[in-house]
Amino acid sequence: MNVPNPLSAAQITGYFAFALGILAFLQKDDRRLRAMVGLQAFSYAVHFMLLGSIAAAVASLVTTVRAVLSLYTRSPVVAIIILIVNVALAFFTVQSAVGWLPVAASSAGTLAFFFFAGIPMRLVLLGSTGCWLANNLILGSIGGTLLELFIGIANGTTCFRLWRGKRGSSSNAAEKGE
Image (cartoon, rainbow, N blue to C red):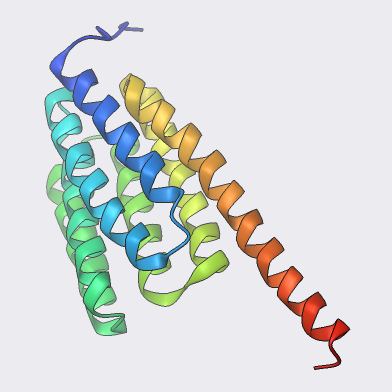
């Protein structure tokens, strides 16, 4: 296994993506989450380009565009177009089975952002996180691996906070006889 240089330009860019990702998944507001994911995904694209993974870089760019578009529309047609573009670009960039992991991650994120909200959206994003985590471990992405581990924890924590908030609201309504 090739040990990555932790101070290379690629890894430093990954650390920046790591910071943006943490900020994104700590957001309780879906719009802020989407906007922050767009920024994080763009820095991820640069990171993967520097690591030499074109497939992961392209999937990250698709994720960037998807996150921005999802701020303005939740159209299923737009989601399907994004999915088609993602898979079509993969056929030109994926060079091994590992290259399909970011494509699966980006596709799951598209489904999450366009067809779900709140807790269900974040649960689908946890599946996406799993794909990115496997990809990053294989590529030797230090910041990316840390990012996905922390995104999983932060996203899981936010899911719990949202669930607890809903449960608390239901309990309060029941106590008031509503």
